[in-house]
Amino acid sequence: MGLKVALTYNLKRKIEDADLPDDYYSEFDSRETIETIANGLRSGGNEVFLVEADRGLLNWFQNNEVDIVFNIAEGLDGESRESQVPAILDFLNIPYTGSGILALSVSLNKALTKKLFEQADIPTPKHRLIRQPSGISDLGLRYPLIVKPNSEGSGKGITVTSVVRDREELAREVERTHRIYKQEILVEEFIDGKELTVGILGNDPPVALPILEIDFSNCKGSGEYFYTWKVKEYEKEVEESLGLSPLWHCPARLSEADTAKVKDVALKAHSVIGCVDLSRVDIIFNEDGIPYVLEVNPLPGLDPKDSNLPYIAKCAGFSYAGLMNKIVEVSLERHKIKNKNLALQERSLR
Ligand SMILES: Nc1ncnc2c1ncn2[C@@H]1O[C@H](COP(=O)(O)OP(=O)(O)OP(=O)(O)O)[C@@H](O)[C@H]1O
Ligand SMILES: [Mg+2]
Image (cartoon, rainbow, N blue to C red; front, side, top):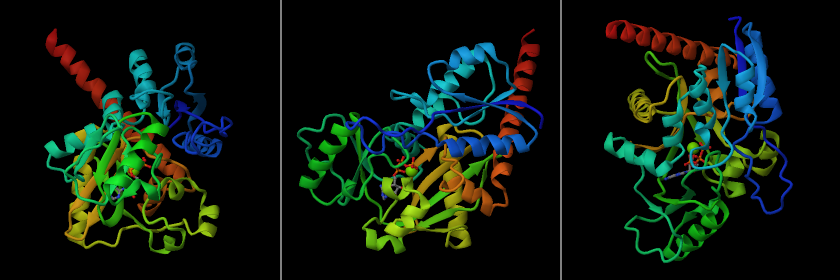
């Protein structure tokens, strides 16, 4: 494509402070992922600049000109951290791939996301949001429940102990999660069913790629039976030896009608949150055929070896590099349309 592309990222580091939880940097990207994305973009004929999204970011963009930013940065701190890079880029009027400030802020707040799902008749597990861990009264939810930090991703805070079966376990887990993550706690009904995730790509219209089913039947020995942090974060080779490596079926083992139902609900969730270019929607499909949407990930992991979306894209016929360049292409197209509409609007105002 011959563009100047800045790749904005946060680098995963080794944990040196013993007070930090093991999953502290889990949302950030490894050097290998960053390099593989950059090489993919270079293979599309682009010049790529690696820009770490630290406090020098604004300065870098004030001193360097690029055509587009390929944004995978998850942000540094705070409840809307994923919006930090888009906010700076919007401020400077620089186009970037992926969703904007609002979609990234909303999707990082699981309870708020679920409110929007409920309003749009998108099935989502019943939940309560807990602001203070002390004195939990009857929540009016049906056990088993799952306890999660309200504003994290990459499985942070999610272990087999997150699923609780009575009031005592609930209190213990809410206290533990609150102590470590220091934020509001989401308690949801735990849905028994098939774990599915749907990759979405493009804008006009967004397209649901083949559904990925994650099958934990061979993880029984390790005691992990759903997508916990351990299963997500441990590298493939380590996972296999520990029985932490689920099977991936893509397309998912669903009938044609159920496939269409799941894709529909995923596309609806993507647009209700206001996502653009790409996202990944996590769903549990229960025995009654209800696709419960857990959340939307507008910044899906792009680890070439371990992440769901590159694997899904591969099943849809994209090489890794092909996927990276496709993301840039759909984003550029979107920006072109936006600029054209702005120009038309300006002309009509004159
Ligand atoms: N209500 C639920 N019912 C059944 N399983 C659940 C539920 N909530 C979470 N899970 C399990 O926990 C996993 C992680 O949950 P969730 O997607 O909410 O966390 P996350 O950290 O945001 O994930 P991601 O890595 O996709 O960002 C799910 O993929 C699923 O296996
Ligand atoms: Mg998820």
